[in-house]
Length: 261
Length: 261
DNA sequence: AGTAGCCGTTCCGAAATACGGAACGACGAT
DNA sequence: ATCGTCGTTCCGTATTTCGGAACGGCTACT
Image 1 (cartoon, chains in turn cyan, brown, orange, blue):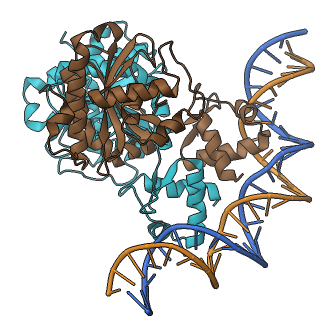
Image 2 (image 1 turned 90 degrees about the vertical axis):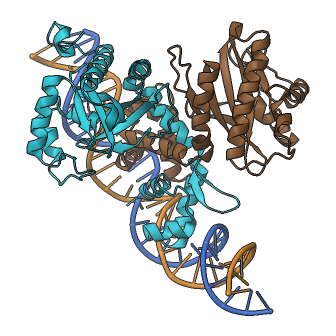
Image 3 (image 1 turned 120 degrees about the horizontal axis):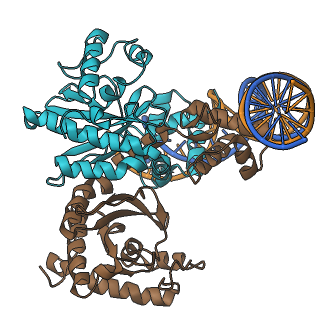
């Protein structure tokens, strides 16, 4: 293992709770001698991505880390194209709207816009969540090649709530339903008490590269509200898709948007 | 120079436009032989922070970079405390509200909330801007030790518009005005056509560690509107300060909030 | 179709760097 | 005042990095 990779490992542990570590804690976590850990951390500090608190001597990520993360977003066409749409959707559904990207067989959260009507607190940008237990993930998976589905279920998947779909057969049926309806419905499968509706975003090559979701407390998504949200989100996601260069095979866009509208 | 620091340098060039580079471009930019650059980039790819497009062979930042940037925000108490306040302020002023932190003698943008009434497009999280040409920067500088001011002007400062304050004497007067009014006014000093009003956030130790600003087209911030915005932003920033553990020296908070309210 | 040039990748001996145990020094707690 | 903890420094050994050169695949021009 090269020293560089070791440095990255150490830096990564600063990106997890509790976000601030002493040298001794780092040594314990990575099973390193003090001298080595100190040298590696000094290199990280010199790089500017890590800083050491002059008082507590603890190490933490520096502002440069945020800058680099921002650069990822600035480069992301998905983010740039979807940004105004997500904001618009948040207003139309008056709820929390998420934008996620397909990344290494998981959902990478790119952006979240909260409901205009209420305060919210969420800092999930950059978080990674599983495909099988999120509306975003299911929406993408439904329009991905079979191999991706199999890959997800090649290892046991975690059940986050009692409603989480954990078998590939059940998921296959669910994905069929999603393809038929054009949007995914997450019924407290990832977080208890939280329902969400999601639709995929296709890129120029026709691959489901991302998704948009609207989420709300379970009791708010009942009856006709579900299909209503579905139609809004599906339409927004398609708008993003077209801007991404996606050309629907059917010349009739209406079919993708369902019977409503 | 260690190989690790070289890796970080290469990674940083991927965080700048055009965000995607070929090996040859990296060699040219950093004056490296092909073999060395290839090895360093391979290490970065192995780390997971950089990925190589299988088609174009170009290197770019990977999702892990976003994750790490997000971790910085999740750890930031300033971000967590100010988040709901910034959102509330955006509604009250119906405009763009920025949250910035003091970081290495510049303004580090942590968060932006757009006007609820209109679409906007901004991805400035993680961007760094100078203290002397932003409302956020001036607001902080006004409540910082003199040494910080001198440090900023120890080198020639860039004039972004014809209104940018470039002399330390003029800035000293400006900061005096800010201390008297309790908020900073950026009159197209950073970007032509853009005015903004900003107020500092103090931490437990009484240091101006961040600031909040409201910005709008110059023609929207005229007459009484300026003081109106100032009062709103100042009040919000103080709310954040108190939550950060700041104890105003004056028992009378009203003095910090000015005559209004 | 042929060929020249560009680009990414692989290989290898020489040389510089990383390695980690041990000693040191600065605090804080007992 | 003393012990223990923690971060820092030092140094000989061993491993890794270094970068020139050769290779192979691709594209564009002839």
